[in-house]
Image (cartoon, rainbow, N blue to C red):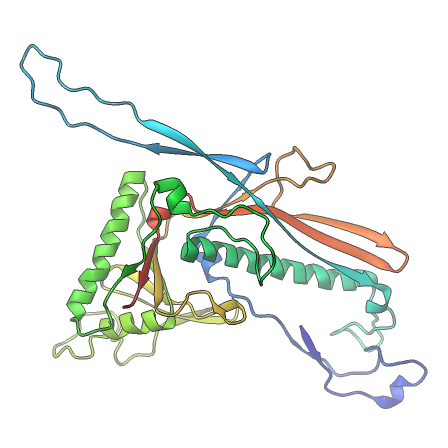
Length: 359
């Protein structure tokens, strides 16, 4: 957060050093802007466990067709469904800060009256606000990693990793996810492009049917390049006939909406998908969706999960987990505040997410 002082009455500064306790006009406060599209779209299921390891039950349902037999024979038999248990371990993440007395003493409260001074509670509240934002961004990054990497979030920003890494498709379905190339930016016709993407939709719907799940909407999270290629095709710029659509994409403004300060272009295609241009980034230089990539997935409850385990601190170990723990330790010169969350961003049905790329 950057605070910019517009004006300062120098005369009011006599008697003590400038510590934002002087007369100032209302300051411009520029907040961190955070992406939250994936968190909002996925609506991940939050599950608490008692230990740092949980088991996931995998069951494959099969059925045998009736066989030809004579009237005196029994015929074929149905086989019992097999089940297996997979073990996954949560990671532990944390962030904290120390609020020293010099962080608030003799300082004017930003946005307050000219004589309203900061207190220790104000300084701690500012840090808690930073913690909340930090954890929101962590959740967005963790869910994004499940979608784009088919794995769990580990170290961020080059930090060391001490937790297990999982390939969800390999662990749950026995095969790694394959990125599929779709040629929707070349010389193929608009109709061919529509059938290409509609075929991917049908494949996901088939998997939904196998799992006993259903979804009324399919979403494709796109890089800018993928979104533009699909948008240009959908606009049907070279079609020499009357368009039969609710919006003429070739002449109208690109549809979009704003979430948490980010603008997302999007449109709903005749292939049954909503395409969203996800151009934001959390870590500088690392876009949420890499160039030329896209990820198709159904809007369905339970697509992704966040599994929590309890803290190892006394009083919490062995009890049902909380999503977040906060601890404070006071000293003569300040207060140290720590936050901790023991979690695993989990993809229980990786076969419902398709990784697509332009050639």
